[in-house]
Image 1 (spheres, rainbow, N blue to C red):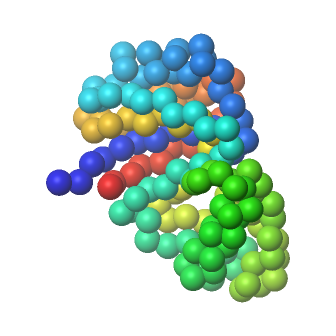
Image 2: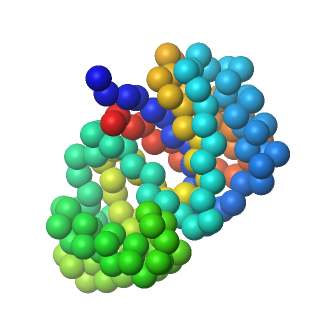
Length: 153
């Protein structure tokens, strides 16, 4: 049986949310969404936050070319540079193999959405979807924009 998660991350991959704010977000989500649990994960450097089995395509944000093979190699290179297992200390722009333009791994077009983050809020088995009002409230509590990632493992 697969697990379904909704993950909420800051739009800025390098943003660190302080523990009090994170607990306020966690408390809010637990009160307003029927969910098995809301977990907070904090990393010293950005981690890749993926959509699991939902991820079907990784494309260039400029020309739309598929980048699966290049992306895997680039992720390995960027992770190796960080020296931290599963974390990315640098998400520098790199030259894309399709059109020669520059973008970071975070800028690529992931279908379903994915991202990089130092702080994650993971909602396990939510029984309802987040509304725009939920997202805006989380953004207000955190004082920043967020990304919502649906994931099936």
